[in-house]
Length: 153
Image (cartoon, rainbow, N blue to C red; front, side, top):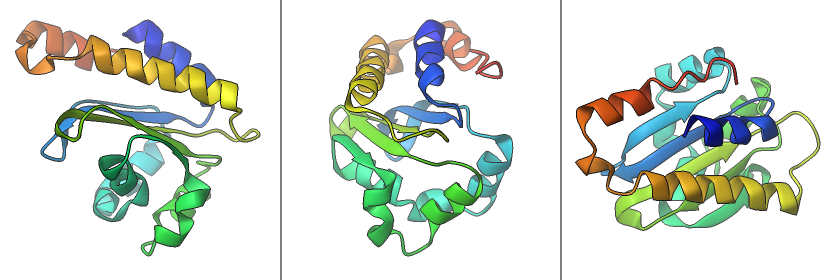
């Protein structure tokens, strides 16, 4: 799992978020490499409730560019994300609605190419499959996954 997350991070110089097997609006695992200032701002302001990226990911599978969601962003979450340096954002969602995995990728460089998107999406698909049945994992296995150190990414 750590190697897959490391591969994903190589594409995303301003970070990524990966909410794995969301059930009842809560992910079984959550990995984030965005700048801590953004994570704090997002959490403290309850932005998940109005985030068009989250809404899209819960309602769809496949991927969408964040710029394509701007018209659905009445709360200005995406503009605020850009002000924190999260540019060229893309969301990818996979899995059934009862156990959806949603990811967000960002970088300062040029928009992601189709080949890069395909590679990142394949990594997310693999993570989703590896964690299938996570509700049956032992506490030790869950804790080991939660303790993966993303600080170097």
